[in-house]
Amino acid sequence: MSSARSATGRVVRAPTRPVAPFGYNRSMLPQISNRGRLMPASPIRKLMPLADEAKRRGTHVYHLNIGQPDIETPACMRERLRALQDKVLAYTPSGGTPEYLHVLRDYYRGLGLGIDLGHLIATTGGSEAVQFAFMAAANEGDEALVVQPFYTNYNAFATMAGVRLVPLTSHGEDGFHLPPREAFEHALTPRTRLVVLCNPNNPTGTVYSRAELGMVAEFCRERGLFLVSDEVYREFVYDGREAVSALALPGFEDHVIVVDSLSKRYSACGIRLGALVTRNKELHQAALRMAQGRLSAPGLAQYLALGIPDIGAEYTRNVVAEYQKRRDVLFEGLGQIPGVFLRKPEGAFYFVARLPILDSEDFARFLLADFQHAGGTVMVAPAGGFYATPGLGLDEVRIAYVLKEADLRASIDVLAAALPAYCRARGLGDPLAVAATAAAPDFAAPQH
Ligand SMILES: Cc1ncc(COP(=O)(O)O)c(C=O)c1O
Picture 1: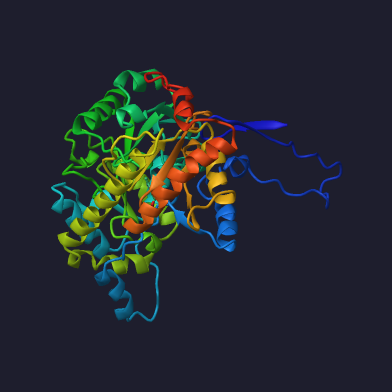
Picture 2 (picture 1 turned 120 degrees about the vertical axis):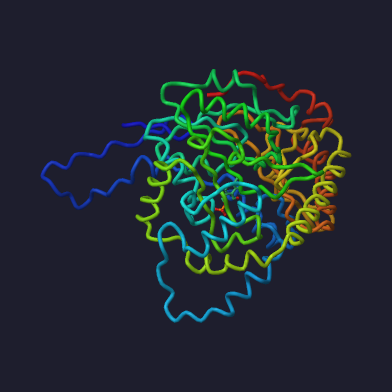
């Protein structure tokens, strides 16, 4: 048996290929790679069959588990599709069409960020930008520091790149703000190549302050690391907050790689368009060569994106106001349920709430398989999948507020009824007592 480590250090054993005595053996099946074996399945999607089954039974399922916004994509982007005259849907330049790159550059300049065309690469969603960033910044076997809970697909991209994610833990009590610099120092090894931050954060809804960002950027500069800043939720900040882009920090030009996307900003997840932004020339060149290898990002999407300058600030203002209202509805509603703990989320459209339970995956299954209230139930994402350290997040769920207000209110009613029913069904007793027994996390220690 040979073994290998997953992105988060889990040891996975691969069976050794039996040796064929006389060369080719018809019965020998080809073996997939260790990388393929290590590739984690999405923890968000694995409960989908239970949701489908609940729907077949006639139960309405409120999907609080995924980040697919219900907001309309701006008409000026959609209408471009109808106006399309091209008779050949051709490849486009690997780094992006000049027109799309100009639109992006102007967008950044509108934010006061001095970005030139040579700092940009069009990518297939923000996802590909994460992948390029990991592959261009780290060698196989290198390490990336990441603050947990984190966007679970970082696991997938780290596994593809052979990079090990080293988690530092943030905590609900602090609104999931960053651990202190000592935690970063403590986790540093000779293999550390980068730090990954998501700001505003999925899954926690935390928006890091300029001082927090500055602390991490300074750490990266002093230790010779890249800072991968995933800013795909940049616009989604509430109560007058500002999301500080890592691109706005002077003096860190060679360290910062920003991951960006149109998916959430324009509620256009399906067009698969994003960008990698960096002022580091070598990193940009490396990512561009990777982009050349896959020929081009979606040309149709880049064509649609040329509608962006017509969108206007009002669209974003309205969308953000809508999400802020939804956040308030959920925050107030869930806060009334005994044993539920959450700090007011600051941005993005997710938060992690602590519930009076001991196993959130079991609770999520219970909601879908064994419970309904007024004809409906709720699908939540168990938070364990957002942590690299086994055992963390077992009493937490991630909630996405991508549904209309009425559906959110119905979801609150479902959860308020489900929690005591679940505690009774599992013999857990009073939800408040369960909340009190949930382990208090150790704040400063980085979790490997
Ligand atoms: C934090 C974060 N980064 C990146 C992505 C990737 O988005 P996309 O590939 O749709 O641009 C997502 C999608 O949900 C996300 O939440």
